[in-house]
Image (cartoon, rainbow, N blue to C red; front, side):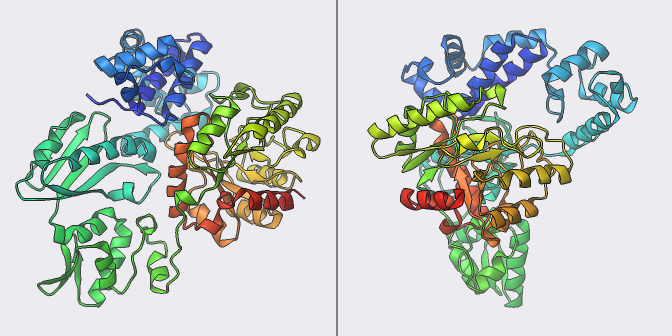
Length: 575
């Protein structure tokens, strides 16, 4: 039975949550959280490493105990320590953790003080006003919990793009090995590069007697077969991800791919253009009366309505059809356009590897330069750098650059933007860096006016270079803080500084519409991995997806510049 890195990371996260509910040793809890993050950042599948007998304790954040649990999960499908925790902590308490604002400590408080074990009990207590008797629970918090429970019950389950990819690509490869299968294409929101994916749509062309449908429903990760026919089947994977498979004739693949890639709003507009020309466009082809005139390729579908091919990432009915008609479609950025990465962490703060290891990994990822941007002192939980430690790191980078080949390290810092808009380190130290990445890590609850003013004041600082993960969101976990993003974009244009597109899959921050806004205002973005380990540079692919959805071209991105031009641009910006 296949096991993916996400499956193991989810177990470590779950164990950390249960241990925290249990009020276990915080160091033990942190070890599981760090392990989950480390597993997610790996560039290889743990199951493959276990099969080859590799020493997992060589991985960042993985000791003997955690390595044994990984092996146990891969080889047996279970982790006995997790089952033991489930016997000690009511399983229903885990559901409460899905409610925004309810971390493990609050869940434990609700259980200890009010005996709340289920969402139903929580909703009942909130409606009765009983939560307000607990420390840290006011009337506003109570109402937010009620609203969150309602939203939780009605919203569909979604998966991060990076998580869906772990299941989608191996499944597509598996189907491609089926006798008689000619092509396998993953469509839907996954193909459009959406930040999160609700389900997967897979299209297949195959000869008539291909056993692809039987092979699909027999896939070892299938937990439930919802339906199965000769040309369509729907299954639920063990991860909870729904997958729809459709077998289509080769002469209709382009039409089907266009139809099932979407979005719905984009497809409606294309069909209307077809109607104006007396055409009928559907998943089977493009028809003039009863005769099919196009549909074998997507290009033929677009050409039938007088348009060039529109990349999947742009198909959201946000002006792409008009742009295509007028010859203004962007030439979208590609992963190979990136020359470097301007945001990563090492063991000096909360990373899992030393600078040389990170440099070598960046070089192997095809990068020319890498900025070391460990956290500053204010973020104490990340063991941030003070002035003395940062100055020592600057010297270490100089020494390391003397013996590195094929990669250059740049001197940087991810400096906290304090509540008043000042930066966490003095100008005398920041002046010695190649770049300064400013970030908001606290006081997320400020009003939009105060949060925006805070950020604008930070951007006015002389040595401020890049505004990191500008909205502060964590996909599926934490909403963006209140901020006037158009004003922030305009301030970046006026100041001449840059905005980050953080490629960490949980962030993907900026969101696509704000990327496009920055492009329109002439503000360069920096697509950065925010890597905390050598495997994290793979996240850049997710950042490129987001950039393409934001209509970004190569020239819209700072770190597409070669090193010499980047240094010149940074010197000009830093004065």
